[in-house]
Amino acid sequence: MRKPPPPKPDAPPKAKRSNTQARGACACGAVRFEIDVPAVWAWHDHSVASRRAQGCAYATYVGSWKSRFRLLEGEGAIGRWEDVEAATTRSFCVRCGTPLFYERARSPKMINIPRPLFETRTGREPRYHMHLDQAADWTWRGEALGPLKGYPGVMWQKPRRAKRTLEPDLI
Ligand SMILES: [Zn+2]
Image (tube, rainbow, N blue to C red; front, top):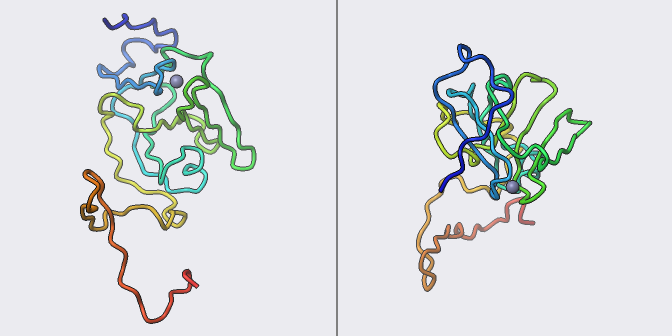
């Protein structure tokens, strides 16, 4: 059985709230939150900093006004890392390690939340790409794949044909 929803201490007056919320949680469930729908926007972040912080090819974030964001549970389970040079703060669940919130000094009213943490739709599709110039050259970009013989369920990208001259990055 699901637990009843916890109280919302920071809930704005009813009139200001959206009728619809999108809820999210970390992998272990210690940290739970919600935003009012629709979010401001959503985008794919190809920067080196986000790739490392999240351990993925690129991060997909949903941006929400902080005034439309509410932490429902788990304040004590949130660890924070401030990157002074980049003027960003990234938080994570200290129990399961899930990356949580990404805040930037240049947008102090905005909180960015990894899209995979949401259980429901957020009202915004991630149609924007930032820092593509920093994208990893090993990121899969939809190239054609075929089944790998002898390994059911494994798809692979066939290597390109050998070239007569070596490309600079192969030398
Ligand atoms: Zn967790």
